[in-house]
Image 1: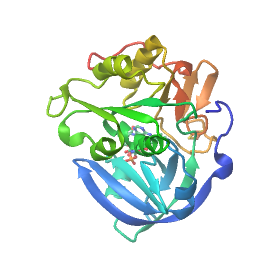
Image 2: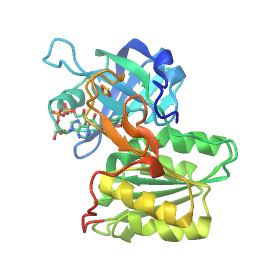
Image 3: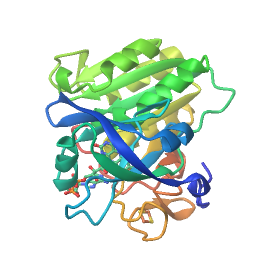
Length: 274
Ligand SMILES: Cc1cc2nc3c(=O)[nH]c(=O)nc-3n(C[C@H](O)[C@H](O)[C@H](O)COP(=O)(O)OP(=O)(O)OC[C@H]3O[C@@H](n4cnc5c(N)ncnc54)[C@H](O)[C@@H]3O)c2cc1C
Ligand code: FES
């Protein structure tokens, strides 16, 4: 992560893409597969694309989405239906054309010295972790995944993690899979038992903040992927500011992945949920 440089922009492309498939994964969550040969070849784990969802409709702004997986000419995006843009995305059909800008931002850093990594995902925080888990496993890094969701049906990418991780631990709010409770409760024992060299985390910000503190206490480096509302996606509009010990940074070009110890978290309060 080169905080402060417009990282990755030199490799950014505007690409016309075609929908190859779009399926419901669970309630309110879909997986869209795009034919995007140029971006798919260049994207790194943790980077995102800025997608113009539908032509001829009233979308002025693109929407940012992490790349869940990339293989060959295909990009996969896991998306949660929240508003007008993601609702339109959920209706996109095979053969439909869109365009995107990407790959954007700084993804996860994977030092060559890694031998064991802990990935902590909450809810849709699994989205930017798919490619990461696959690539780490391909490099021979032992991957432990701690995955949390409200209920078993919302453990998106569960099969992918089960396939590639050496250890896959689950927590659900209602106890319908794994431990009952929050994924943050899994982190301390996993760090103690597995002694990872690094912790990667993506999920709701209060959860990320707790995991960052747990990693810091254990003396393990931690990287977090942060979400901000994004206008341009390329560093020009300043809508995506993150406060860090090095000053204000733009999540779109300086992140979305940051070293956790550099982040000045927005709230001192940790909701009781976590
Ligand atoms: C770097 C990055 C990567 C992302 N990756 C993914 C991903 O892989 N999958 C996914 O489902 N979503 C992801 N998001 C969030 C996604 O961009 C928003 O959910 C989406 O833009 C909402 O568009 P909309 O038109 O449906 O919602 P809108 O109608 O624009 O808004 C509906 C609701 O969603 C909230 N919202 C809008 N944008 C964001 C945002 N950026 N973060 C959080 N809440 C938002 C709004 O505040 C509002 O409450 C990512 C965001 C960023 C910044
Ligand atoms: S989204 Fe415009 S500066 Fe980051």
